[in-house]
Each structure stands twice: as structure tokens, then as C-alpha cells.
Image (tube, rainbow, N blue to C red):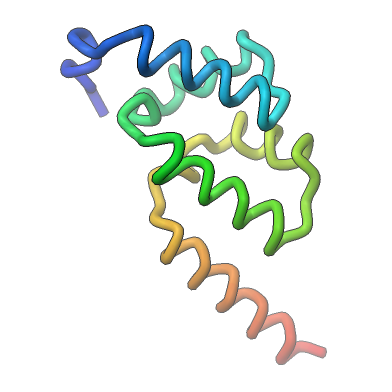
Length: 103
């Protein structure tokens, strides 16, 4: 998962904006942001407004988890943002259906 194009990316518009967004909306500290980017550098390619924010909003509302819980999961598995919102919704729906059938 090499990302050589990141070497020529605009740090001000990518890295710093992403750090600020994670700090403000998920209360993720800067050192944790660095860990996230090291684990999944492609996250710097994603649009906050078109990709990251919609996933965050959906996961918070659909799963009812807190921002702190989501921040912990993002830190552990930043690849979450590599999935489309459509795919995430489908998986949550499938799991819900399976759980409903158990009860």
C-alpha cells in the first residue's frame, strides 16, 4: 500500500486539515492521528466532507456509539474509511437482520 503521490501532496490542505477535523469531531489527539495515517496513509486522499464525515455520522447514528468509542475504533481500524458508505450500510443492515433472526 505504497502511496508515492503523497510525497507531492499539499500538506496544508491534507494533513493539517485532517488532524484538525479528527481533533474537533472525534477528539482524537495529534499523536493518535499520526498513528492512523501511518496505518492507513490513503486516508489523506479521502475528502472529509464527501467520505469521512458521512461515514462518521452514519456510524454514530446507526450504531448508537459515542464519539469516544468511534475514535477508538478509527484508531484501531482506520481502513473503515476505505469502504463506501453504501457498503457500510449494507453490512450493518445484514448484521441487524441476522441478529433479529436470532431473537
